[in-house]
Image 1 (tube, rainbow over the protein chains, first blue to last red):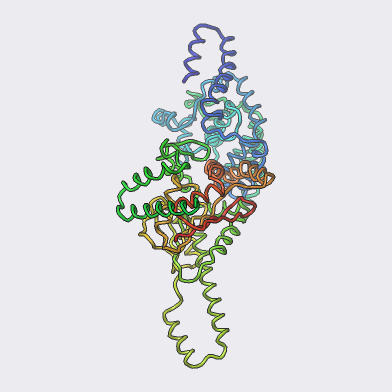
Image 2: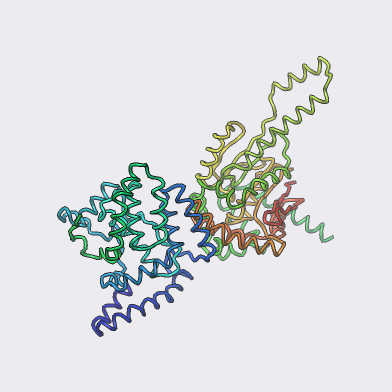
Length: 252
Length: 327
């Protein structure tokens, strides 16, 4: 809230240059004053951890996620504990992209409360918004079930991580992949090519081990290379899907 | 001279407590007790300030019980797994040692407060049953060539059955009791066990009911420890034993350093990975640091009215067993 009102002020008084520097400045101000607000933590769900703790978390959550792939919280923890470098690269890519930059400043959240469901269901078939709603209904998932980021030690990177998680479902829609094991592996491959997060790479390499032979064949022959190719080529997915993207048409 | 005056005043104070408990059961009694005794003792300044510690946080007193309830509600399902993981299985040895120190005879009544998943009660029943079997065997051995009269007497006395030891598991948290009941069913223990929901500060039992009162790893979660101790005194029979197994202060400085590092670095991480709950296990290690040390707790037990109070350090002081008698 604070940041939005500040942005309006500077927009009227200065030009584009001031806006850019303002963005950097607010980033610093937000961190230092809010660390006092959340008593030593950088954001409400932050748990500060040492590197030893992160290493053990990565190891433990990796083992737990492999044993039980349905433990989404373990996959999330693995991503947070190992993803620092990849998150920095992702954040920089978002900053360069104009839409991504807006997203970083305005910090939209994809939640049932922020989506305009009636408007989205009124959109014609084939648009991203309509297909996304259909995906949510068919697979009986909700964007609200994503775990909060806990172990990332930078407030902006924590938002990038959260955005990545929220965009995951939209990626499923874009790639027309269901939420079964094969679909998840394909989406992970795409994300690994796009983001370079170690958790995605691990998931993409170790996930296929749990697939049946026929699905493995499908993965290796067609879906896998397709996902990798498009992941490498496509624009940073986190930068798309800001407000108004719902009406864009999906192309197969 | 001073010692005898001290024992005299202790006896007067404990009689006073007992009389108050006999006279009225209403909540007003709590206020009387608190007003009467918190003045004398130094430990309970927090009751007047009306805020207390919840790990390293400070919370209003009324909230602490609710927060502790939520912690144990969320950890109940993984409680036993986490205990094994965090203590590397050593908690089993600690509980076995408690039973050995207790050395219960068959036929006693045990109140296992904050008993949760029932570890102490199961061990108690097993111990008394195996002790009864051993006594039977010794009896048989010493009667190698009994007369017909002896054999007939033996049959008659056995008809009454072995003296039944009974364990009552009391816990404030229904989830923990649920897990405990499931464990009992799985272990096939059907008789001699009761499950009661109750607050250690206000036990739902009459006076002079139990031979042994135990509270294992529970008393540090109680908001008013003195009240729990007074309740323990009330429900014990004269001659009954109070036993408390709790984390305490490590005396060896090197071990203390290692223990602290392990507690704060590893235990919340284990909590996150196994149970998906960092904060509850952070509370656990912080609440251990907030609990009084061996000597202070011994004095608190003595002030509540117990006699012959002693403590035994286990694993270098990581855990201590405190024991006292109601006379």
